[in-house]
Image 1 (cartoon, rainbow, N blue to C red):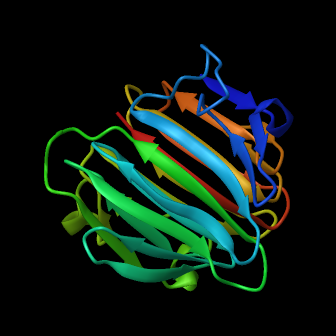
Image 2: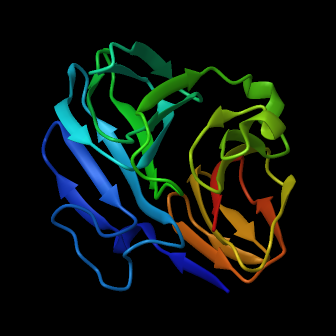
Image 3: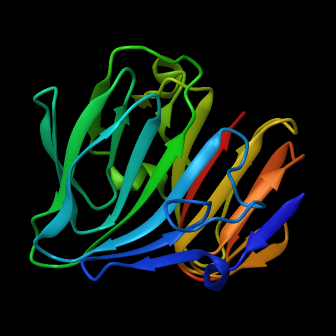
Length: 232
């Protein structure tokens, strides 16, 4: 099954400093048919104005992956971690027993990012945070795993859940393939460029929910970038 969720149908909240689109029910947006996809609970498409951001706030027992598309996000948390994650790179926060963090756009331009929450396999563990700069060239024409529940195998940032977060950069006409299990759930978004997923066309920033497939073929109709989560 492949279900296209057009960008125009996503939940929307514009707070001035933050313009957010919600692929799944979140905050003031509630759709009983979009409560998550497998263990994927949140996928927010955020635009954060320059010199603004999220003040300190708490989380617990959630795997939170931030994929920065443009600009950069600066992180600070109650564990003493600090870092700046730039476009194309990823940070991961395992909230565990509880963590308070702030995320600010300290740049002179808007920052755009995907914030993805995945339900952990194990609750009540120590919180943690990490970031990584990934070589952009390694995801040209194929998927690169950025965060994974098996980080040693995938050479990726660790997350405490049976899931993988991957990205690919495709020139028009190129294809990328993802092998999986029909019992799992995949969710894909192309932040730029039209794509076909197993022959079904999607527009930029549409949500693409997939299950029951053992192989996913993404064809770029334009120069495109694709972010994919494969979860139980």
